[in-house]
Amino acid sequence: MGLSAYTPEPVDKTPYPNPDMSNETYTFNALHPSSNHQDTSSPLRLARAWLLLGIAALIGAGLLAILLVVARTPGVNELIPIKDFFRAALIVHVDLSVLIWFMAFGGVLWSLAGNARWAGLGWAGLWLAVIGTTLMVVSPFCGDPQPLLNNYIPILQQPVFFTGLGIAGLGFALTLLRALLTAVPTGWTRSSDIIAIGIYAGAVAGSLAFIGFVWSWLGRPAYEGHALYEAVFWGGGHTLQFQHALLMSVAWLLLLDHLGHPLRTKPRVLSVLLIAAALPVLAMPFIYVSAPAGTPAHVAGFAKLMEHGHALMLPLIVLVLLALPSVRTLRSPVKSALFSSVLLFIAGGVLAFMIRGVNVVIPAHYHGSIVGVTLAFMGLAYALLPRLGYAAVEGRMARWQPYVYGGGQLIHILGLAWSGGYGVQRKVAGAEQVLLTWQQKAGMGMMGLGGLIAIIGGIMFVLVCISAIKHKHAK
Image (cartoon, rainbow, N blue to C red; front, side, top):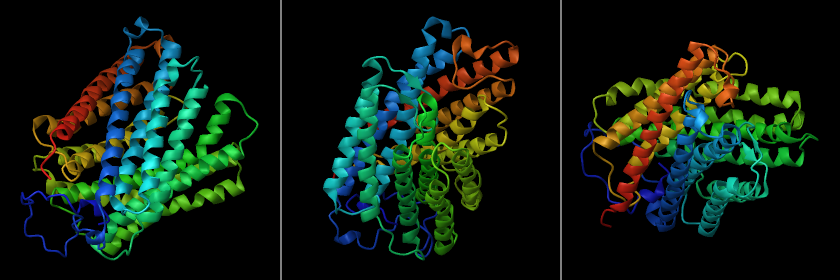
């Protein structure tokens, strides 16, 4: 399946719920054809290190999320200095929970899908990402943060943050380059090809996104402040969403396989569907050539790319939905994560069609989509931990964690959507929210309750992972 680093790890001997599956079914536990001849220690160690960085980023994002929920919850938000604190904390929270966590988990998959070549490039990318992330976290305490809540990669206008973002970006760029060199699929008609294609397509999308960021910066318009960074991150940010969606699709397929019920669709059909879902990103350079960053045509072009391009994921989503009943009776943290991920991602998609104007329906939409990706990665982390040399994830807390996190986030986004319907604006807190009606206050109170429940679910995920990492199984 392209996850060549699975080779040296012992396989769980517990039979799958469908133990009579033949080798002709579409199981993704198949090894990469060349894996038996590779040194897999480097991919494994890289994958472990990327996972640790991702978990660390979630810990930091969770701590900040507690303060963010307080900053927006009626009756409590007056206790802290809202304006500067809320915006600075929101920026670092978003960058940790979306940019760093998602790119780090991409690093896990690209490391496992690759081989031992260019190991130095892989480790350089990892350590640059660690250093850059650390600088971004401490940057609010290094002078006036001057926060800007632009889309995709919100920033603090100060040197330490910019230095950290640049170093982390370079690290991710090196990681994507190594993925393009070492994780190339070898075909498209076998069951072992499907995951390799999805992971590689994610690397292509991520690489184009980073090219877009550089392209926008070099051709940046003569704007200042929010308008400048909105233009710089708009094209690359839209492109990066295709990476996240493709890797989430890979995670769904792997989770179904882990549960013993891989999709029975022909391998070449699934390969075509994954390739089709990735094809829209190839429009990125054409948009840049025809419409420079910051122009209305550039903004509209990428908005249409996201609106119409992601529709090509629908066949994959439908296939996964049709497969869910086959695993509904299983008691597994992986199943909990799969069900929660699909629900939240679809909820986010539905809310996209409800956006009318600039209000909190917008964050309700992208929180649903983002949390759908996060839950897929959480479930895959549970499945991969024993493959990476750690203890198996099991027990009641692990099974309930995705439901607590996903359920809290569902309440959170429904509260935002309700409030947005009554005109509550986005990216504001405290008195700036101007909550005048009981509907506005009830919706934002619902948001706060859901956020607190989700924080508990996030803490549960970290605790489950730390427990598994502390108890390594015997080699």
